Length: 186
Image (cartoon, rainbow, N blue to C red; front, side):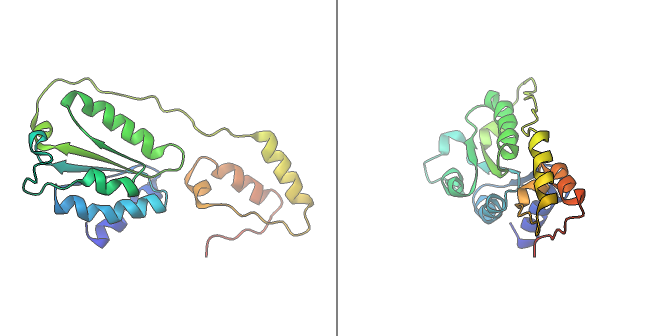
C-alpha cells in the first residue's frame, strides 16, 4: 500500500465518521497493508481490511504468495479473522464492522482464502443491530459546566476520541456555555 493510499484510507473515516474499507491481494499486497493498519490502530481509526489468501488446502505449505498475514496483523489490529467457510463470511463481516467501531475504534483484518472467494452459495445477510454505545450523562455535564463557570482559570483537556465520537456535542456545549476559551490540537 503506497503512502498516498494509506493516507486516503485513514482520512476517509476521519472526515466521514464511517468505517474505512480496503482490499489487498495476497502476499506483498497484504504485507504492504500492515503499516496502514498500524497507523489506524495508533490513531484509533475504524478500518476493515480484506486480504486475499491462497486456497484453504494450501495454507501452511509455503505456496506461492502465501504469507501469514493473520500472524503479522495481530500486533496492529483490534482483531483478525481467517474465513474458514463461505457460511461464516457474513457473520465475520458483520462482527468486523462491530469490532472496528466499538470502544476505541481501530482496524480489523479479514483474510479470505481463494477457494472461499470463488465459492458460490445463497447466503442470507447477517445484520447486527447497532446500539448507541454512548450514554449522555446530562447531570454530570451540567455539574461540569457549573464547575467550569466558577473556575478562575478553566481548562478542559480532551482527547481526540471525543471529536470522533458521540461525546462531541456534550463537550462542545460545555466549551460554549460560558465562552470558555478552548484550543484545538497543536
